Length: 329
Picture 1 (spheres, rainbow, N blue to C red):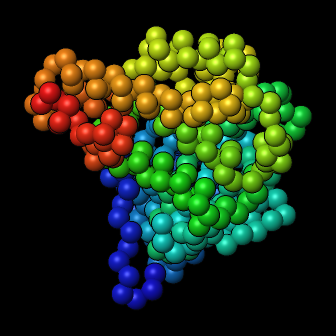
Picture 2: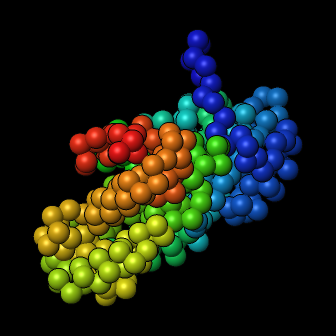
């Protein structure tokens, strides 16, 4: 790490799996989470200071892993999962199949599970790792496309984190990390499901892979009947709504067809429609119960608005007044 720069903060500290100075223990413990692998350190001292923290976001695993020294990692084929690797400082050299990338905080790596992988994580390079089961990623891709895959999903190895879409995707990860530390609303119920859905779908739409061109093609909007099915489900249970993936499956259309259909027939995306519906439900409760400021926060949290400042802005834009003004009648 350059002189004068502070190391990045340890993520997910309250979700620690282990800390060890033993290379053998580090290898064994990390293998339990991911897969067996060869692990050696190139540090002159031969010592490591490994920290591994992890939290599950539905099927997705968010990990903070720091070996505290330069290490060489050789897992062979990952086989059953994708692992998006983001250095929080320093960097790594990652070779998968016949491709090599130098990964930095601005450039993640996304190895393909069916190709041999080997890596060098340089000293002072803690990593944020997003662990996605291969079956989960490919099932979501099928629902986005609306048909079966003809070949395994393969991402480009290097992921540019400086693009607008990638920054937006990374922001979703940061929301999950912050809320996991606080044991907040994001880790509960339908909010967890929605965030997991956004992260997984966002990855497939953000980072290039062998089906990206198919996803970029124009898609026919879902018919009004399918939109009505989704609207009925929304109205029946806006507080524990199904995810986009579940809505599309229930309506018998692809996720993209559902999204385009909402734009065409409703004038907004399913996510925007749901947010508007929840704002209306919050307003109805505020008008009927005359709550104090603390209760306003409780009502907002109950309807999935876990950032009160952003909630107040959305509410004012939608209704022309602040939630507290509605509550005062």
